[in-house]
Length: 130
Length: 89
Image 1 (cartoon, each protein chain N blue to C red):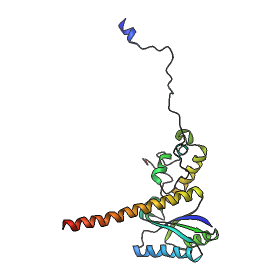
Image 2: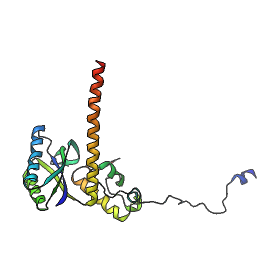
Image 3: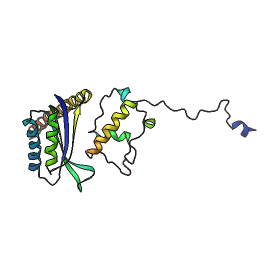
C-alpha cells in the first residue's frame, strides 16, 4: 500500500451538479478497485495560469488515497477516457509528503471546526439582539 | 586646507562585497517537503518570466533545489504556475 494524491481539473462548462457527479465517478473508480480515500478537497473554480484546451478556468479537485500501485493506471485511463477532465496529476507521497499531507489535513479540519464554532456563536448573538 | 581634510581617506580599502552569507532556508527552518500545491510559496524561487532561479542566487542547498524544481514543474503541469510569462510579480 502506498499513499497517493491526485489533482485533476474539470472543464468550467459543467454545472455544479455535473461537476460533483464527475468527482463521484472517479471516487467510485478508486473505491471499486480497493483504494481507501483519505481526504478530498474541492478547490472550486480557479483561474488557470495558462489556457488549456482554450479554457482559462477549471474546477480543481484534490483526492488523497491509500492504494496498491496498480490502481493508479486504472485511474489514469479513466481520466484519459473522460473528456470532462482537462488535466490530471497523480503523485505517490513519500514519508515526508505523507507527514506534510497529514499536517495539512489536520490544519484544514481545525479551520473548519473553528468556522463551525463561530457560526453558531454568531447566530446566538443575533438571537440575543433580536 | 579644510577641504583636503574633509576628504575621507581609508588606510585599508573598504570591502565592497561585504554581504550576508547565503543559507538554505529549508535546512534552517526544517522544511522537509515542498508542496507543489502552494504557488505563492514557489514564486519565491522564480524570476519575472517564471523561470526557476539558480542556486547561486537563492542559496538553496542542492538537495532542496532539486525538490524545489520538482515542485515547480508539478505546479506548472496543473496550471498553478505558468511555463512562461511576463511580469509575474
